[in-house]
Image (cartoon, rainbow, N blue to C red; front, side, top):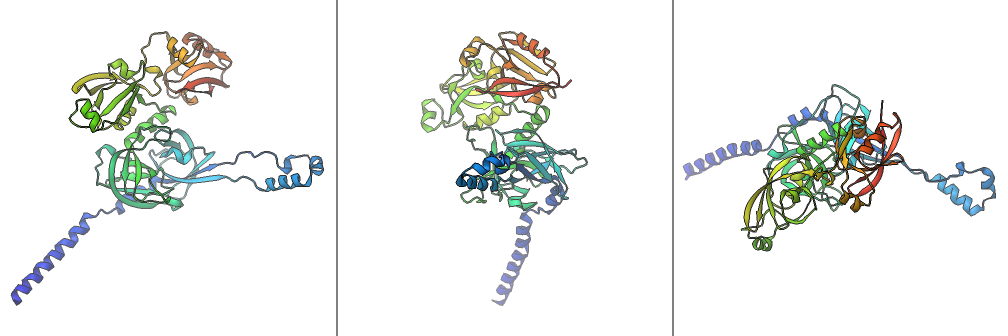
Length: 467
């Protein structure tokens, strides 16, 4: 019995000695990642100055104040004492180039009059907002500095559910806080309040709180695989549901913002919905899959390619479309005017087509049937509006922007492919030839208003030709 007991103790001791190191070895060590990357993470302070609130006692002639009834003078004095305060917000970001380009969230700097970037060594710089994209919640900043430490961008497509990830940021203003967790899911659809759905979010259980927004999400190689953007919460703090923008999306958006200050996306011109079990059966599918086409934009890329209402798209450009929410994610990343293969089911039978992707907004997705022209002076290619477009928008004339040259006046003003220009200065635009003539006669180094229509909304932007 004694020998049996000794043998049992020996076995248990061996199990203990072997098991404990294995459990400890299974846990990742984040120290090296933090040491190597903290210098590339920044804290962002955005300030929104108060708007003018009307007259105060200091703005009024003392003679009128003396004649004013006491009750009104008292109210005015109280108003003058309650001066509006500056609004400040805190976020995070990370450096992507040694000369000072920084990625963060659009909502971190949205509406800010002043943006300050604080580095890990406590240096502070005033940042210029190069451009922002509300649809993806990405902003690109620039500070006047050189020799900066940068973060290495990884491959978010290679991420797997269950993989360890690490966040560095400034939650509630607590600089350079480190939290870790795992990837909970990929390709999450979180439509914006305007219905946009172009980001396949990475879901994690990393503790993300207000102030982490815009900060990097690292994999175990120390590469940035996402930008922390949103949390799901009922309390205002982390409950283990956080969402990051895949770095593939951020890379594409930041390159466009750096080149032109604006972002264009692919567009199919379709309305879509999910395929449930009953619909799958009715369309002759063996299971629910893909994106069901419920509507087609007349003259849009999908209609031109031969796609029909009732078709179910299951693959686009070599990317699987498992459910309807996947389609905007894939289309939005395709460069406009690119032809890609489409796999779909029609009446239960597979079909293969090719579609030339248009630009979000759809104006330039039509065939060029009218005159086109351009202006090398401002870096813009335009073409005539069709009679159908004029009738639909109740315009007597106008041109649609086909392409914008990086670094030129049009790009600096924020013009985008798909914009419809109806007026330059006080001159209405009849057609492409008329537009070119008007632009050639514009004065240099003076802001000139352009009336344009973008995605159905009319407005003005200022164009300045620097010569």
